[in-house]
Image (cartoon, rainbow, N blue to C red; front, side, top):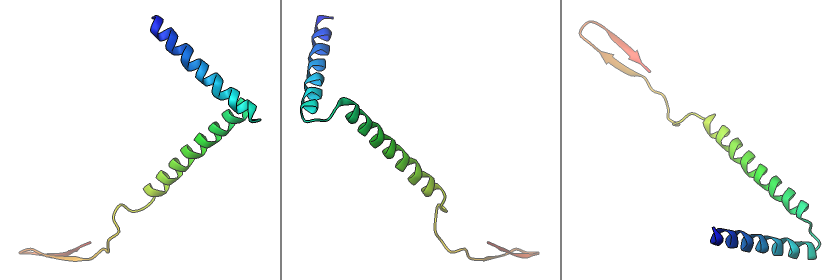
Amino acid sequence: MVVMRELFISQWSLGSRILGMLEIEGIGSEVVTAFFVVAASLAVLSILVSAWRLTGRRPLFYDLFLVEIHSWDARRFVQ
């Protein structure tokens, strides 16, 4: 339990140092959060749009042709 607490504290201090560096550079944490939310939303949207466009196509692009089937009493064409 002590190890997890120390790990959490070290991660928290690392995160606060990164946010502190960003605030020193003039970028607030709200701007960084908004940027990541917009970037993740655009990534998900582009994946969904590309999946929708891919499923709209025919699975195989091939030319249809007629096959003549003969039997003893009839013949028919199958596409």
